[in-house]
Image (cartoon, rainbow, N blue to C red; front, side, top):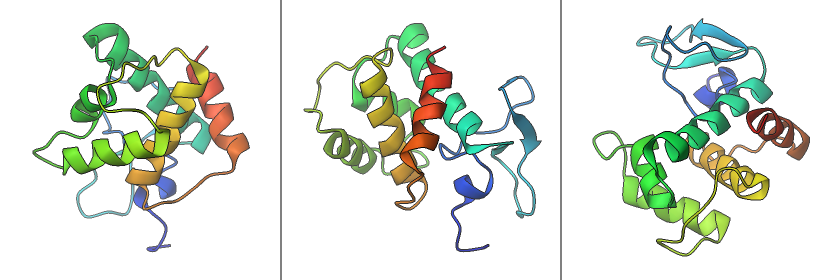
Length: 141
């Protein structure tokens, strides 16, 4: 089980921090069996992906973040990550030009962003397309 990425074990492939204030659909609480628990745990990967998609939409609607660089800089701040490398990875995966505006309300754009973030956060782990599509569909409701 140790070889399975933490985000996958937690059904939280975006590695969303746990906060009791967040009432995510399917959130079970703080992760288990780690020395320093930090991340939320979900009942299914689809609900973890839903939360990831909802956060991306919130970054856009509440904070006006409309480029991959702006979104990922908030998602993975440079005090914890190599944010520039993360941005390049997501832009490359989604085939988005640096600085291009993106819409998290567009199902295909959100799907690409979610897949790219999961890939980056979970060491290239990939879910079945049906799992990711269902999570994104739930996020768009």
